[in-house]
Length: 328
Length: 144
Image (cartoon, rainbow over all chains, first blue to last red; front, top):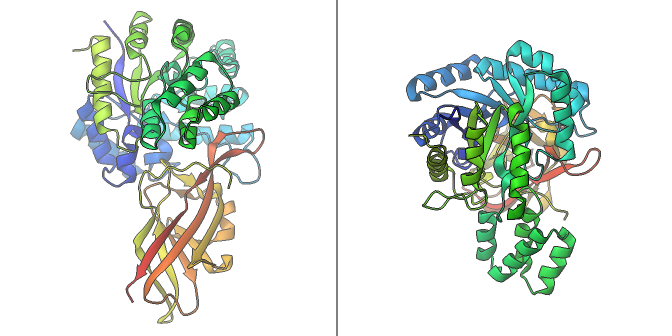
């Protein structure tokens, strides 16, 4: 029996929200309709009184929980190291801002807070006693192109192990397990007039591990349309993918940090009508959560590169997750 | 121009219908319009690196431009220091420009140059963050 709980981040509906098609209530309602038993809130996106939670907003959150049966389970913080125009925030300042986030998370009743790696391992370590007071577990997000084994993430792991604090951990985003090119970027490139053979060439060069500069030169030599550049930059950037043969190793990296993970982000970009994610192999990832006894929320997270809204894809992702996890 | 991120989730950044003359002592002496942040989340005003307004190609003097959010109207130079003033992504800011004689009836080209930093996306050593272009150039119509 799986202990995995299914949730959704309201970020899934970011496009509808930005277009005023959905207000906050409609986002909560849609997450409930998709099958979420709790939601994550991106504080800078949807808390009107950010960085504080007003009593008015809290009242609304409670009323919506009564109405739709779901409330916030996770608070996604932004750690805005570059918010001053003249210099980066210091560790002291980053810590002070993160404590304000802890207060907001605690007021909303969230037990988990997503932290970004803009917060240094040193500042993260100093967050532990505060996290304990507020009873909010803080997880550093592991987002593509980082993987759990990246040197940067290993520094956080060292802090987590050394302190032994049960309030410091990770929030892995399964985007790092992508093994196929990002589908929306591929479709947009085709629409912009790029030939599929050139996209395939770019993908092959990525799999072969050549540098972005070399890949760029080779696809241009092959006569690709300059419109390929966005897709190519994606393949080497935030939506990069690995060769399929590297998957067992990447899954092992996930397994290694899973005991320290408070929540997982089930990232998705494109699911067809059969509810199959085009680039991230959920059929191979999710059984690992069950085998390892992961006891937390798997939060659906749609990243809308097609600007088509997340309502339908979120439903499909939830169907996929339930199917693979054997829920219902 | 160097690379800058664009994220127009809402296709209309400058709300064209909000464009109108601004009156001082009963006379047309400027214009105002509303703008939405072109990103998925809100930002502190201190993330704004550049804000300039052009009407029919003419740059408006910086001292004549103000930016209002959360009920506070600020001159442009103060945005840099507004580290506690948060611009929510669904709240529209109002931009006011003092211009003697206001704007004539008919079509005009309005451009807002608005460059920001994405403050959690460090793209290089030191103080180097992803630039975000939240500006727009549109044709607006003044009815009277």
